[in-house]
Image (cartoon, rainbow, N blue to C red; front, side, top):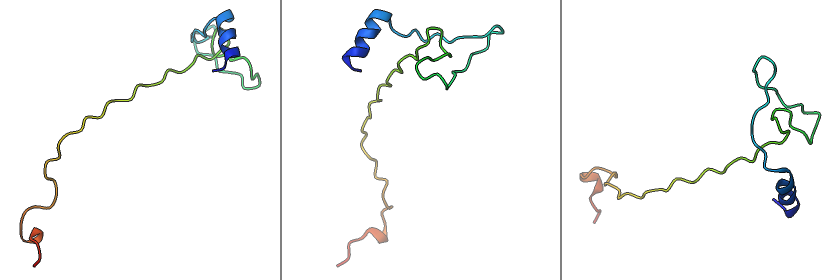
Length: 77
């Protein structure tokens, strides 16, 4: 986000993310012909999506899942 967008957000406020509804209570779709206005939200601006936190990977000790012990694993002389 550049400094101009931050300044506009400061003056106008953050997008709320409240969806617009019609008279029957159903969601209103966005009109693709208008590029600057998003009709599917009440304030006309799409909210910023939150980034998901990465899950920590836990390394566990491997439990000998190779070939079974036997004649095939013997070293050749």
